[in-house]
Amino acid sequence: MAELVRNIALEAAAVVREFPVKGKKVPFTAVDTVSLRLYEGESLALVGESGSGKTTLSRMMLGLLPPTRGDVQVFGRDISTYSRLDLARIVQPVFQDPYASLNPRKRLLDVIAMPLKASSSPSKDEVRSRVEALLRQVDLPVSFAERFPHELSGGQRQRVAIARALINRPRVLVCDEPTSALDVSVQAQIIELLKTLRAELGLSYLIVTHNIGVVSELSDRVAVMYHGKIVEEGAVDAVLSSPTNDYTRQLLSAVLPVDPDLARPAIAAAIPLL
Image (cartoon, rainbow, N blue to C red; front, side, top):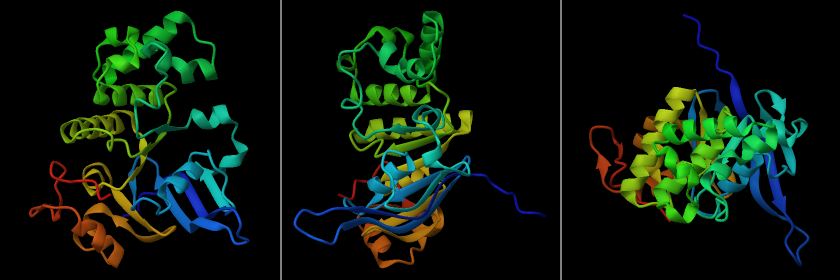
């Protein structure tokens, strides 16, 4: 039987990102010749400790930071050839801190609708209809459209951030530590929501995290970064049960307990590594 050919949603090809260092001739290399593919419809976790380069790499794959060398492609096309609006219709971020990423002076109706208004000229009725439909989809009452961010809990704000990311019906979400600002019980709820949305909408996820429990629950594949390089990559179950790299083993050793049936960390007990 012929192998199913999957489209590549996001691809980094031998990307390097350097930053100048004051008083030094040699720049700091945050990402060092990394190649990575996110396939359409899959969830890929990019994991590593703080300073490993994972956030810098994700910013390049979002188009927020140009690579010093190498290329980033979105569905087979160089990311630099997209306009900001066209790229935003395809790839959207979900940030770590849902309170910091939401305008505290705006009602949630306007917060969620902002990307839609920036990319088109919708009527008031269309805006309200789309926002209310998304509130239902992220399991929030439609009455929340009239609330302000400070009136919501952390988990509710993250649901609003996800709704805002989905307003223009993107194909890819880049989630940068999407649960780290939440307590454990709320983390599990947000993970279940992301899993449901992926199944319903056919989304592709790039999940940037240092929490192995999130990797275990939310991803199909995992790439481990260390000092700007990918040191291990593979299917989640294979990497978590039989890691081949010493650094990956160290990351896993920091997470207890391990589910004996799945040979991987249990989400309810998983703790951030840093």
